[in-house]
Length: 434
Image (cartoon, rainbow, N blue to C red):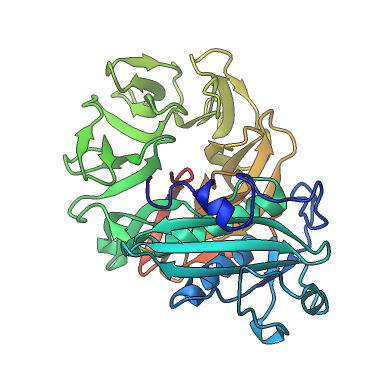
């Protein structure tokens, strides 16, 4: 069995007194409707897990859930019952009196082979029932992943939607003076932990983007003097040039099946058009043929359409076309200049950067251009990327001397700073890890 990648849903489930799915009431009293416009955070009690590193695990779970804006972890000093046995049914009245609508207990131990065993239980305190419980095994290096996986499981059980905590973000780490900035490819957990550098900073790198189904990224590098598109295997460090195109290449992104890269190519005539390359055959297909600047393409989740920006109407606006380049249609008509459109993983929205009235805005609109909403405004901010569940965006904001990463949910009310050691820009969110 792969470490922590799958819960033991037979032996582990039996150990927790569950079926292979979970012992659930037909309809629990506790649930969060994430489709409401304004969600009141759910009060949840997350106890220190039993074991030497149990508190570390539960603190990460608590931080993940709190950062989502959907949960309000209760201060541990308010707890009445001190959980001594996480496998025993808690005293529900002690948790109801502090308004803990859900309760999480758990334990972390060491197996004879040195692996960590972490288990949790999620309780509905008002219904007086266990909602879910699982256990996971991992090596020491994956301790934080165990916590993120548990947080995802709790998030999904209480919202009905996949979580996004067991994910990574690739970004550009920026250090040094502003006029001599060193830019390195870097990767970290979605909460800013476990930063690792993927390039040495000798050449400028830009626009890293994740493959949807592999631990692989595409990015641009100026090491040859002109921007070239590369593929990089994150775990092995193996790298290859996508293609040596005449002119300059920009804004590469993968197709949903990971078999193509779509990008903008600038030719000698000064026009920038959109091309797709098949990564197996290395053949390219031209999708736009205009005298304008067409750039920043992004596929829809089913791969049937592409959203992009073009100034063919006089200023940059958002357009949608078929994946073969057919039916090119403008969908944005607001004031200002639009850029960096990105299709939501859910397929229902397009995120974008908008520049208007002297400020930069991060917003979303429906795929037909209707329902435009601004989630964040600032002096200079851009480059939205979606969490894999389509509920949260991350982008970068330039302030106090350099760019930093920020996340915001679809309500626009839950904005969070993402901690990084240096300045950081151009984030790209990974799919859920496997």
